[in-house]
Amino acid sequence: MHHIKPTITKQNGKHSVGKGFSPNELKESGVNKQQARQIGLPVDVKRKSTHKENVDCIKAQAQKAQATAKPKKPKPTFKEKN
Image (cartoon, rainbow, N blue to C red):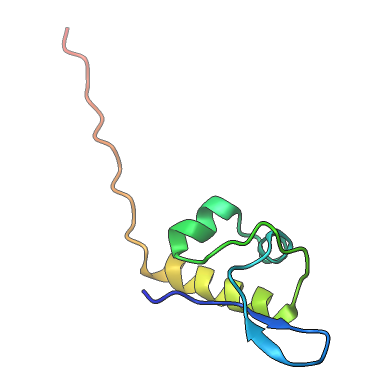
């Protein structure tokens, strides 16, 4: 899976590629830092801003990762012998 980088809007209106998604963006999308790193999303804890495009991107990646995840096998149960 390739890494997805967030887009950041600068004060002059230009867009640039960020180092990672902000904790606020992760919070809005319903993903915590640990889940984001498991999916392969970079997290930049220094950023404070929130961009709607990045929140939508995180939600899409989380749904894609959830759809491709392998289902967990149930643990075998053992009966006690008398």
